[in-house]
Length: 133
Image (cartoon, rainbow, N blue to C red; front, side):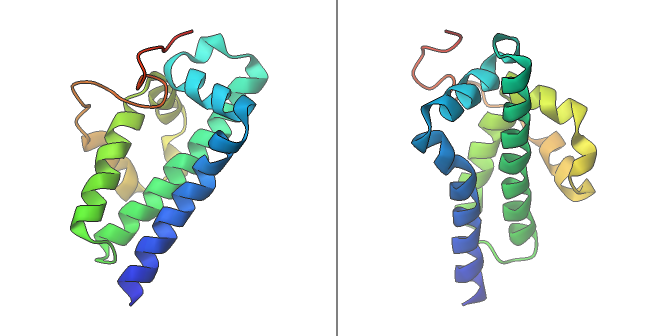
């Protein structure tokens, strides 16, 4: 029962972070552009992107914590890990990661640093082949 509750909480945590991207076109624009080209954003929008990135990565840190302690199904974890690989390879998140790794646990930092970048990085910023506009 604890595993099911944890898995549901993990999904809800990430949904809470990403839901504004779907509901607010301006927030989605900042996220999508920031993933691939931070310099295309204003200073204010870069700050918003960094706030969203922090929350996004914290949700993944929690998901990874649950997996490490046996509260996350391996198949579900593999999906989360696969998604994270794409996003941490995005230039905007990679830049944030270089600037702020200390705000995450050592365990999560080591894990992220071992992730192999995907051969084709796919995020909402690149998925449709219309990025960098």
